[in-house]
Length: 426
Image (cartoon, rainbow, N blue to C red; front, top):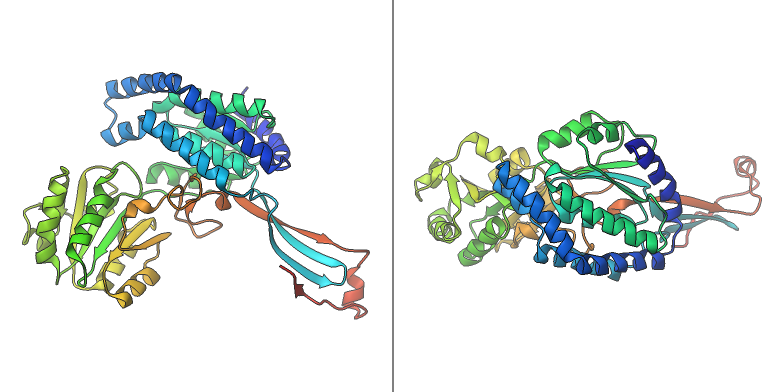
């Protein structure tokens, strides 16, 4: 079946899927979770093939880390499904209800977007997260993964397709695209696809946005910052920054640039350097930073880089305003944090930094749909339309208005025989 047929079938399936009960969709999620654990050995064998092929092609280490899908990641995606199962069914939830007049009731209810097209990087766990989120929210999904994860994606897709069919979901609600040509084909399917979510490099996401009329939601780079203010617990700041950078480097919410207030720099930077170098982090610094600790030179270009590696750039700033300006200039609107004991500084930072996630005194690695309690995420959105930040169930829903009456006509209201009450019910 070619991509157009898959998309057409997904569109048809999306209508039937939106009408399924929450119980039916939850039972399908349980079946997926069970099958992933039962077929873990098959999944790992497929992943071993992808890993071997990628190593032969000298794929970069950050991509290899994302590609690896062993027991820990299988358990993580199963935990994500368990989290999803704890959430109430979002489809059909009443968001607003207004009495326009007696026996004329307007209701706004949540409903699926329809068909979601997701083009994602070489992370097999993303396939499971995306599929299960779409399923819980009643959306059909067309998936296009990176070629590095071809074998892993294939077995995961087959498992999900087969068990959900057995659980009573409409055939064709999920499809996997495998060829590179499918990307350009997907961009032209505005008749069938309602939303595109690309996950990849800045250049890739920009290409998607410029070459499709389908609405696009997502983010490009994850250039995340932490600002260490002058009023700070130094040990806490060392701990939080070290975790933000090193807990897992090959992800979009890992710290890339650190900003340090000049008043605390001499006390703070030597301690941070020792902590980071114990984790084999390469540090780059501005001229003021290098006057305090012996590190590599950070250039203007470093402020624009998402390393996804054990590299951190550091800049000393004169005040919080300089830090905020730097973040809003060079950041990607993903996740930025302030570490401080000053409540006024914290409030100022969290108000003025223009990002989807703004933190106080915690690791940037918390920026994640599963950690937020969303069950999982299809990605992080840095746009300001529809959804922002980690996109979980709510980001995959839209709404419709339902108006129920008893023979009312607009002429009566236009000519003054009837009058709106506009009484809020819910």
